[in-house]
Image (cartoon, rainbow, N blue to C red):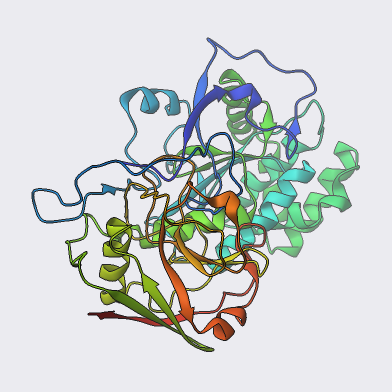
Length: 441
């Protein structure tokens, strides 16, 4: 079974590099703790210029149909697949969410963000803004969990700020104080501790808190010990950067909303994806054409079942099932190609299965309007995503399965709006496929 994402091991002290506040002196980790990072890597299927890793893969003389009458394929594992015992042990350094944590969002959210953060770090304030965007976009799908890690060696007010948030929480206003501290960071960032405490008292009053009780709680032994304990634990596992962010228990390096949004979109649809390979529905001795109806008109594709039976079978099956209806062209360059076939519109997903490439010498990208199957750089990762070239692109030869050609509707094809879901995930949705009709003769 294939995974969309790659899990790699690395030392926690190197978890974040540029987009983080880091302690002035690195605290040596205890017993060399390691953790697992689930990288928000490139989309699963992207048509790219060839690299050394994407070598030509000749079509092997292998079976097309399994014992159950389905096409031969691999089912794709969930983005957050089950951890191995070793991975679970490594991730155990991050405690599960408990009643001791401050949380915002549904407990049953499909995505849980845990942030180790502090209020004086400018990068943490940036992450706060990004998480606010995500919470607004996905109020039912995202839960945010706050964990304090003040870096007092570089941010002297950060511990008091964390204690103030805790004190506000004792009166039911944790998230209000949390937002105020980030939103008004420039107001208190350079204050002395004494002046900062005065500033905090005024904010508490503005939030409707009992100011005297708040001020007492902020420096109380219980609150101070809670924050100090959190700091000590973070240091003990070798954490030296904030924000450190986990998504569903896996640390990630990209905490921007644009980087997390595709993950959420993929997780949202995973339960609806196919859990077994498609049935065999074509006859390679027959001819097939596909009429792709778009918002601008129709395009006619001639399919090549004799050369790419797996690709044609997959495409025909999905088209007849309505899988492509409403799917957008998420990646379009008029000097290259138009790509579609991902129900999330991000380029990260597909139908839930992948199959081997079918490379034949008779078919090349030397002409425009060739129909190809998108894939990742790993073998046997062809899937539901497909592309049509605008111009001759011979550098793709031998790398991607060609399973058809655009034979009518070039004017409609030229009207597809340019878009790049990779570089601009927040761009408006691309042009839609309304339906695909298969003609068999």
